[in-house]
Image (cartoon, rainbow, N blue to C red):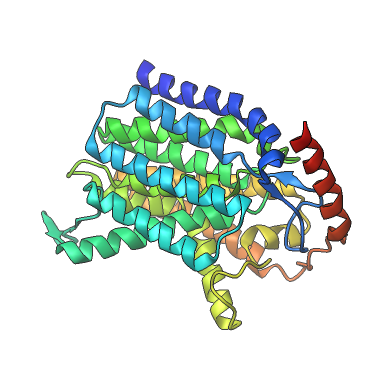
Length: 362
């Protein structure tokens, strides 16, 4: 048990130490978030370089405590590229299509390192159905890109993405532990530690955002590491458990895509129709909204654990409870449009440009 605790604490402490440094570095390199539209929940310029603390904490812990393996190096290589893509997007911006192309490339890297979804279990009996290589590649790419973007899209309120990633990784870690997947358990605890170490600086009122560097990295690592299970439990750990644990962001992403298609808007276009926006529109503040979503994610996490132990009825009941909460918030007739304070973005930009010039000068 000590090795599990050590990898978690190491990732936690490293992220906790590096986050204040990221707050100071962010303005000097231009990694800041200026509220240029009323879609954003903040009204002041914020550093968005917190992903570096999560990245260093997670990767350092993996390298220190896990034995070398080609598959683990593949996940770290893909995660590093994903992190770099996110950082570039945070500093200079990147077209959505190019960012999607890099996500596909990172998924292909995983496949090249034999981290892939190669089979499904036989639903009518024992044994497995193995995919031909091309189908395995397609399924792996869809899985990795999909899960990566669910974390990225849910990163809309202070502490939401970091907290959901923590809950998801702890749930998968425990499931891996009870099924004997030591490597996955420890890897997920590294993600949990990195997320939790960043969270004190990101919870409302946030001092820093993780940015795309953090959210894309977390999503990719959750998707990639969950595929590394041993044969007997790979299907469950790679698909069923993560789908249930990440049920909230997966639903929110699917709902966003459907909403944009119906409204004939670009799928990658940001809007204020996400679940967390709707809960806030029902009258809850940021903190209560985030805590409510933590609760729903926690219920889904427990449902995933129960499902992995073949407790289907109990798991199904918890999913129904979580779905009921989501339905209530989506259909609340008293919901009102968020009336956010108007932000004079021009004056903010001028003010922050002066601050940045001053910091760079120093």
